Amino acid sequence: MPRRYFPMSTDDQLRFPDGFLWGAATAAYQIEGGADAEGKGPSIWDTFSHTPGKVFHGDNGDVACDSFHRYGEDIALLKRLGVGSYRLSLSWPRIQPTGRGEVNAKGLDYYNRVIDGLVEAGIEPSVTLYHWDLPQALQDAGGWANRDIADWFGEFAAIAGEAFGDRVSRWITLNEPWVVAHVGYRDGRHAPGIQDPALAVAANHHLLLAHGNAVSALRASSAAPVGITLNLTVERPVTPEAAAHAAVLEARQNGVYLDPIFHGRYPELLDGDASFSPAAAGHVRDGDFEIIGAPLDFLGVNFYAPHYVGMLHADGEPRRGETVTGPDTVSIQPDGLPITAMNWLVEPGSIRELLTRIVAPVTGALPVYITENGSSWHDYVTQDGQVNDLERIAYLRGHLAAVHGAIADGVPVKGYFAWSLLDNFEWAEGYAKRFGLVYVDFATQERLLKRSGEVYASIVAANALPK
Ligand code: NCW
Image 1 (cartoon, rainbow, N blue to C red):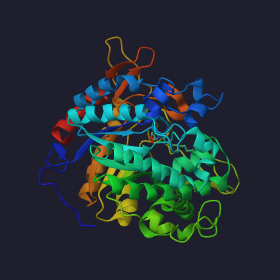
Image 2 (cartoon, rainbow, N blue to C red; image 1 turned 120 degrees about the horizontal axis):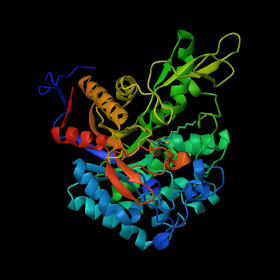
Image 3 (cartoon, rainbow, N blue to C red; image 1 turned 90 degrees about the horizontal axis):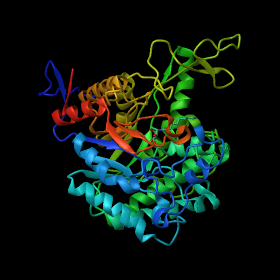
Image 4 (cartoon, rainbow, N blue to C red; image 1 turned 60 degrees about the vertical axis):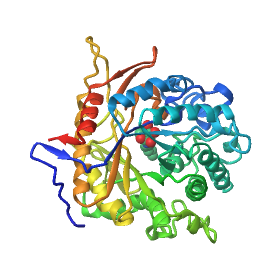
């Protein structure tokens, strides 16, 4: 790739290209609350979080950040950050309470209020159609394991496109389909809490078909750019022997989404592996790859941490920092790298490696947005009423410098959305894990800009990162 230099980068700052889009992101179930307000139907996360033992501390999203009522405050915070765009998601069961047919006009009204408020504030709405809160009625009909969901999702996308397509600046069909299939249906740590590889691999294929149908539906009703957000992994083998295993892990997480969308096939490396390849499991029908491969306007990439892998020692004993993951493989937490409250490694260079080694060779000149990046720490309010989250600031600076490096390498990264605007309901971790640039006191719903929020605002204002 040709290396490009920024004429405006100087010794003391890294300047981002003119027009670089700065944003912040959230997801409906994580912030809205209003779980049964104004005609909303139940989602799989309502069911899952109310099932004892599924979420840390028995937390649920019934109230969350109460953004259903406090979206005005959220928009004011976005203005304070100075961001050009807000990435939010739509709750499918707020709009279609049973996921099919009947539309809840009051649900549309809510998003109209939010979208109008953003536009008025000069903030572009970047809207994700699906960020994990499936209508429970659709789960009862098989959820993502039922191929019919591709049509149900197409219908929902058409409704959203017609309702909001005149004001939305960019559409994201799905957030992290790998997590939906793998954590929801294979590992079971997320809703619907199923542990069945056969259903997980079916979900993988149906998510892609649903994505393709949504692209077509959105094209019919909105001129805004359309993309998908993938959580791609960077696998780092610690020995040459572990390289083949790392390649398989990348195919299982990256290839099973990137290859069908951009190359019209599932990864060859997984041929014959019916528990990871939808092709090997017999899910592909004639015409599927034409649907899945509908041309996109951008790729959204979420990235948090790399993953280190190695081979199990001959004595079968894992060493310190190693977790056994297979008959002869281990997952490794290497010494010397910081670890966030989520237990995720901090290694900024890996986002540059992801963009240059994994993304750009597949997407070429297609614009790329970092649709999520951020970190969780044990934040607290000091006696003088501040959150001095220095670790989050270091994480943010490190990752932005690495994204800048990827742009210098020639990767067309057009924007960056911090995860997250607010501390929120962190899925299976409940409220115990805070990712926000804004601290939320969940007892009072008071919002407080963290120091990282102040730092982010100054980076956004300068369109540059001080070195
Ligand atoms: S949990 C998760 N996240 C966080 C979440 O807040 C956000 O909604 C997601 O888009 C931050 O970014 C994403 N990702 C799932 C990681 C699951 C790891 C568990 C693997 C188990 C096999």
